[in-house]
Length: 267
Image (cartoon, rainbow, N blue to C red; front, side):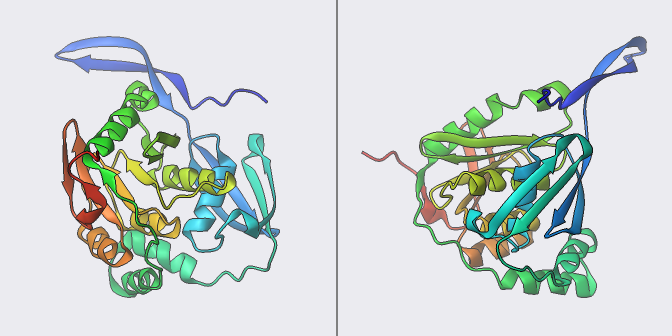
């Protein structure tokens, strides 16, 4: 199989301090992926090339359609055409909650917003007793940022990783932060990785949709170098998820469930 190229060069003209320079710039690539669920066209997503199986499985987990690898009968992908088929072992009923949830992420007001909140309220709280040392969390974020090569090259992707006390377990970069989260969660499902003792590391804002994905994936801690939203924090309190923002250098801010963070190293 040919190597997947996540970026390419593009001719450009730069104006800097009154000086005109011509050259090339590294830019990220994006491709459409159409997912078929039990022979029916389900969704088309625009994403960074590659990890299509992880993306599709994580997306279906986030939508509450899949729960574990045991739900999947077969996965087939035509990577060059951007087509993927998933067959489940049992029939799946697709309700209009799928469209309602995505409408809510766009408009955030009116009935769609109410559907989004009601849907979130139906989620089960994360089942985990995970507690991590603050120093370890900062170490994991440092490792996470050191590996952000594609972002440093192009400035055009979001980074997400799944990490535990022993280090980073899975890491993906994608043009869409939701896609990157889905790829990480999909990787965990496909490889039967327990997420109850892991945390999710993000490069960008912790939005409510990201929080819901973490809850679906039973991830107890979310850490970001950026900020959370109010709705994220309200839901995190209910769903037993610790939210940590502005994790940079030796600093971090704990917003919810601080009991999950050990301020001193264990003996």
